[in-house]
Length: 228
Image (tube, rainbow, N blue to C red; front, side):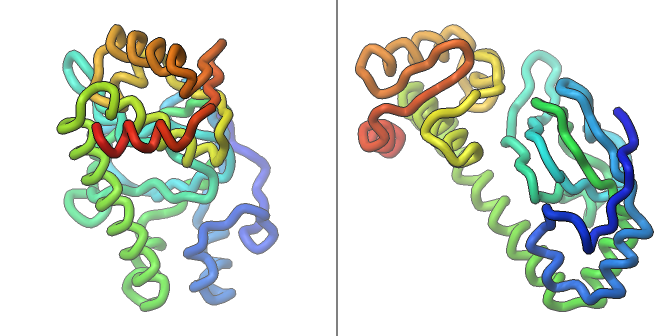
């Protein structure tokens, strides 16, 4: 973890869509109350069970969001550039209810949570945008939880692959997750992930080699995901 050279928010090329609702003086306040930090792959960005004193904005790179368990973790999703990491604890008990670790090198901005909350109180457009995004993520999490617990393994892994394709906005991408982590994302064992990946390859639906996955038949993959 290293502190980066500070760039004024007005000059930053990667901004959250929330920013368009802030006045110039509010952007200046954000700039005065942020710390830019770089993380190497594998480092912890936010730790489950720790106090939330800052909201984290992802400028570049990808991170893994997961709940830590005694024997098995539960991966909730992948962070992407241009997104904030906060979580329900920000407005409940000020405690982080999940951990975020970097899958690649990640550039972040840590912004004082009090400043963020003040914008929600005083800027109705910013507050509405924040609530819409929070609700969208909640619905997405509920849908994923239902699919990964109710569908058969074939459907679960298809869901997981489609999700990763959306995250990386491509039909061919570096998965970044180990097979064990793919299991933690899709509620499967590592062995089941391996068997199902092999079956999808045999059927010509995907190619998975050296950590890179390519979707060859999107229509069939979607049908598998839908039918479960």
